[in-house]
Length: 161
Ligand code: ADP
Ligand code: MG
Image (cartoon, rainbow, N blue to C red; front, top):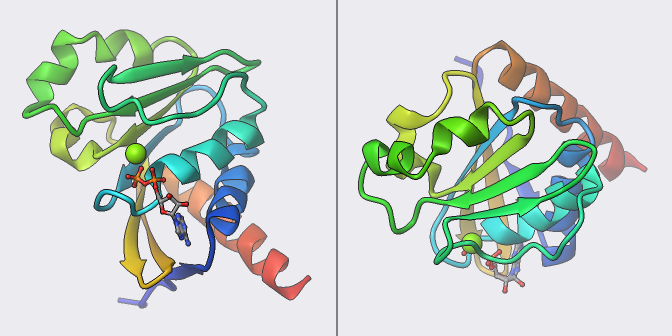
């Protein structure tokens, strides 16, 4: 196995930049799963994704509302599974409808409900490293692998620039 490079993100602004580079590439049906402890930067990354997608509305944590809808050319459904205990609870809340709505789903704490997630999904696992954050990319499926390679290329080009 080739060891995949972990991305080091030094500041919240850089986390938003990483999200923006990804958000620019997203299209209807893409699912992004965000892992990481409280404060790891999942919502901050999602702010960047929304900026890259050009959606409207302020991105804030949907912990208590489960889902925030951000209209756009392609809508963003920003979800948070922190308070969910099973994949079934996600289905009960109409997750199916969001998946079929022609938008992008970004779900924080997605690993809590992984059985409910589409097989093809890009997981970004965020970890604290002092003030910095380490972002590991886990791609499940062909589209996710495509997104991973695009994101790595764009991030690499940015560091060289
Ligand atoms: P989560 O959604 O994972 O709970 P948030 O994005 O809401 O995390 O919060 C992350 C917090 O950590 C924010 O207050 C942000 O400003 C701060 N922070 C500090 N350094 C970083 C960094 N390198 N990347 C992302 N967030 C950072
Ligand atoms: Mg959050």
